[in-house]
Amino acid sequence: MSKEREIKKVLITGVTGFVGSHLADYILENHPDVKILGLARWRSPMDNISHITNKIVIKYGDLLDVSSLKTILKEEKPDVIFHLAAQSYVPYSYKAPVATIEVNMIGTCNLFEVVKELKHETGYDPIIHLCSSSEVYGQVKEDEVPITEENPFRPSSPYAVSKVGEDMLGYQYYLSWGLKIIRTRMFTHTGPRRGEVFVVSTFAKQIAAIEAGLIPPVVKVGNLDSVRTFTDVRDAVRAYWLLVTKCPPGEVYNIGGVETMTIREMLEKLLKMSTVKNIKIEVDPNRLRPSDVTLQIPSTEKFYKQTGWKPEIKFEKTLKDTLDYWRGYFKTVKHYYEKK
Image (cartoon, rainbow, N blue to C red):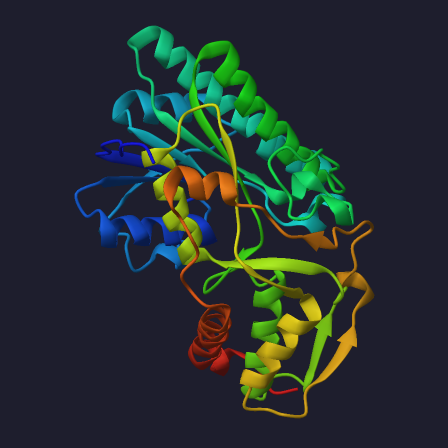
């Protein structure tokens, strides 16, 4: 394991999102001397960071607006850029492939171009964490499990294609221009604040709504037979910090959990935590993807050897915390709802 880099200032793109907000929490708690800048669009909801807006600095800009990126980076010169901003919802990418590719690929390219220009003009040369995705691997073969970083790409959605593009852009800008880019391919991660359209969160939200008496005791589902390996987001952001302090530029690392199960088994665990015991399951055709990725089990050996990282949070705690998050949400907003 290599010596840790010293970090005084970071920029988190997508700071108002699920992972970005948890990363800011982690840094504030564990590295309080580090200044945190968060890139946000003017219209970004601030709910996820409402508890820390007085502890971080929000910089308004957009990945699709080069001038805003250049202004921020030229003024602030963060030591590390955590590039987490993305259109990250796979089903939406089928409906809006151009928007997905524009934000994820063109937005990333804009960021790299600005850093490249500033490096030439001023010598500014930050570490850049590029957050790719396990979706780049697509539908793997059974003999390819656990999935290593050398596995072929078989992207099965516009989102996955956009992440392949991002991933390869990161490698190309490292090779061609010497940008200090380190790539990660994160496998399924979840926890409190996860968007309601993602699998664990959508089930937990429905169960919490049922418990609150707001909807009938039926959970709407998609494909329950897909296999996933789950990671808690709080373990994920700890991994990201180790990445930028210990890992060499130009490399790519799988990051993922150790608790593997089908989506059905995950749902059963959530249902056992519910105070309502007669909940039914109903397949919603709108929740089925045109093409699915049904087997995702990572090899994280390379990352472990470099950093010593292992997941620490048990999946039962992740599920309970996510369910409790939505229970708290409905306690707060219940008066806005009418019982059905």
